[in-house]
Image (cartoon, rainbow, N blue to C red):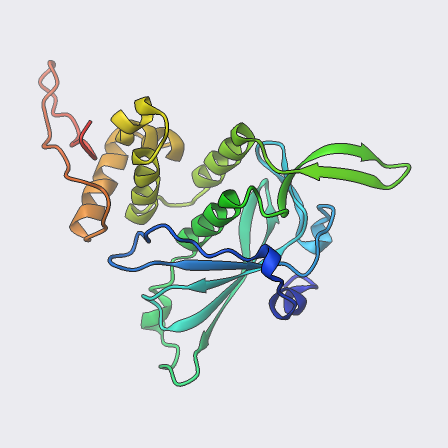
Length: 245
């Protein structure tokens, strides 16, 4: 656990908090993320900071309090930079006052990879929240470093690299990326959301289609109807499309 863990939780400031407002990938629920940072550092590993993909920097580690209606417990994640990505250093799942005890069954309903994605969404909607930044000026002799918020292409490169780092793609992750494609301002992305999702996740279109099919079976909302499978000219059956493309 990094040295400022308790301070990150108890010394929260509203400036670095922001709830996720978009619909959760869970059925009929919303996952909220509140990010708390006690201080702003200069990207030192001993403080949980470090370089991120896309030429960005995490200034220091932070705590994220998760509100997941599917998990009847308090969830707090400590997040730091590792190998160019945001990573979960530790997670604490605790009984809420008057709530049920923590059991192995409820522990299995906690989705760490999904929470990390929601954390990125929250930071992205706040232009990095002063935590994920780009360095604009450095003078080591004067001990001066200037930071600014990420540019859109820098954030996109960071986000794509983070998603591709996931050890296992899930229907929830595919659904979230698919809904993001449907809401894109780029008409080419909106018209081919499955292809855009596959590109972002670094997976084949067929694999993404299967994940989206499973997501629909699981009742995940906001994906629209799928298209039936079609056959290629060669006679090989194509994968079912994940949406109306």
